[in-house]
Structure formats: C-alpha cells, structure tokens
Image (tube, rainbow, N blue to C red):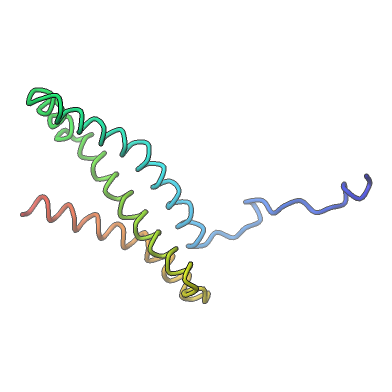
Length: 129
C-alpha cells in the first residue's frame, strides 16, 4: 500500500503548455456539442414550423430575422464549418499524414481561421446574392 502513495499523479491541465492542437481539439468538441444541442433544436423548430403552416413559419422567420436569431444562425454556421474543418484535419491525421510538428501546428492554427473565413464567405453569399 505504501507504494501507491509514491506513484506519480496523472498530468493535469496546469502543467501542459497550451498549443494550437489543444485549442482545435476543444473547439471541435464545443462546436460538435453546439451543433448537436442547439443546431438540432433549431432544425426541429424549423421543420415543425414548415409542417405547422404559414403562420408558424412566419413566426419562426420573425425570430430568425431578429438580431438574436442572426447571431444564433451565424454561430451555428461557424460551428458547422469549424467542426467540418477540424474533422477533415483529423481525417488527414487518421490516414497517417500531418504528424510532423510544424505541419501539425500549422494546420491546427489554420483550422479555426479557415472556419471563420468560410463562415464569412457563406454569409456574404447569402446576403449579397
């Protein structure tokens, strides 16, 4: 029993040095959870509004056109693109490429930036068509 007290503890967040890969991993989980919880709720609301007729659909659209609805939709768009870019990065890692430290750090840093650029491009295409 005495040897159990002398064993080292698992590494804790306080001793890790933050890096781009750690940030991308956390953002991947947060965006996936956001899509699953909030995105699914909005999708079900939208489908219910479609099935409910014109009055319920107008009610849905009224909320989505307000500032808070726009923030919600932009946030869901970012979550989608972030999760997609991070998923593609993980796919490349799963096939055995991109494990070199410089490559991994580069693509880890580019993933959230690319998600922001794709979100802006998608909303620009919607707003300025």
